[in-house]
Image (cartoon, rainbow, N blue to C red; front, side, top):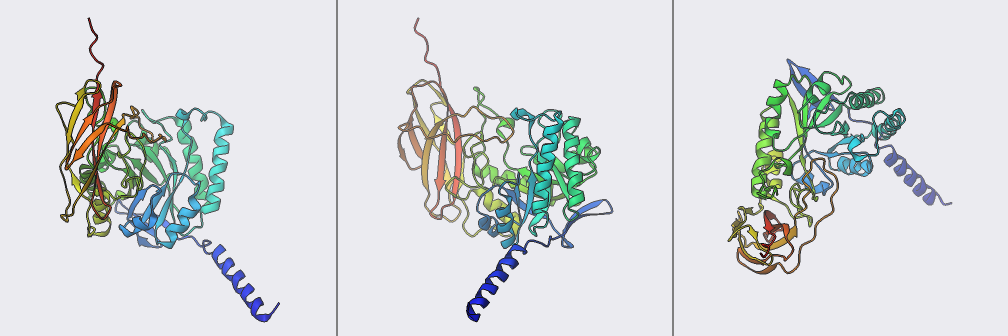
Length: 430
């Protein structure tokens, strides 16, 4: 082998070793309390979490002013940590703890609980020294719904958190509950000592988290680990129990109010927040929770959060949209015709394209965030569309449906609104 070739090999090996050890030094993160005020420190500097949860493009998230991403489990966490580190971001890494409601796990089964603990331990050992790691999220809504006070579950949470503290002194522990009702504050703040931070997933009531924490006797700081629009389970409904979804413009205002009241107006308690969802998913409807559409189009909530995260609004804002109206009524007979209208505008005065779509109603509005299949458009329902209106001929099959309006500007920014519709059973002949 020539000296030149040998030097190249040594250089390649050196670069490989450098890359393989690049993640060997963790960046220490700690909690500090002074005069009853909590603060998160990263590498000795105050760190307010400006984040989102989801799997959308991290570069776009960083460009919007966010500094952190939340993942719910350690599957695939390595590439997320690497990508975040390259962008100067951090990751709240979730350690998934099973939910009994899914039917395959029992917290009374010592073997299952131990195996879960062992899996968590392996994940901690794998990722604890990564410089992008911010904190550990021990479980997500594992307490289930209702009172959330099952001592078996909380014992498992504390056991995992204790193990983390023994293995990783550089990162705090957090557990995430579904809102604050029942025994959640007592269990997290008084009866789970190895947990440092209370993560709260909250939607309609997110703006009042700080007030309710104080009244509930909270002693630990919190992170809003999911926040967004009102959920389907807490929204007004039609006469046939279909939830009314906020427009994307209304959602942007709702996100802004939540962040202002529960983070910016609550220093000393709030360590920051993760908006939900950086990406797109089917839950309730295809547009209920995503900050982006499935083609990546940016909605108004991204503009709102960009301004809150960075201090500056984007140069090109998403269109605004008003609720869809229909005539003669939102309930029709099979094959009945409906005229739909919506008002949209673009802040920069650009032209807007409008697409209408009708889909069967999902009928699944439960909490929990479980995976749902996307529902395709029904072809042929939109007879004609012109300007800001569309003429529909509803399906012959009785049932619940939903009409969606998608507005887009030339830059690819978008706005959405929808309205539930009902095709009634025809009257029976005498």
